[in-house]
Each structure stands twice: as structure tokens, then as C-alpha cells.
Length: 40
Image 1 (tube, rainbow, N blue to C red):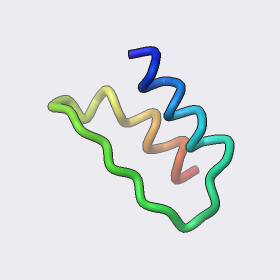
Image 2: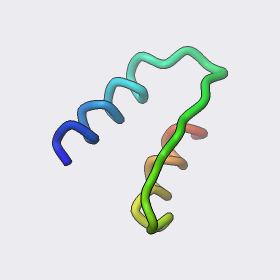
Image 3: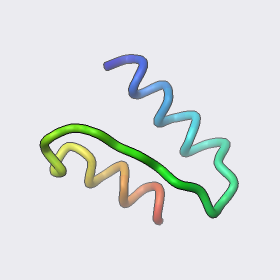
């Protein structure tokens, strides 16, 4: 999980828009905050 958080931090701090994010996993509820932050 630490690696996932580190990668998410890289995307949030160093991304050039537009970009594509691919997030896996079963529960969308776990990803809603990240999606909101990315699209914010």
C-alpha cells in the first residue's frame, strides 16, 4: 500500500494535464477521493 500511495503522490504533484489514470481494484469508494483530487 505504501507504494500505491507514493505513486499517487507522484501523479498528483508532477502531472501534466491531460493525462490518463488507470486505477484497479474492486471498491470504487476507496478511489473516490483520489479521483476528485486528480480532476479537481
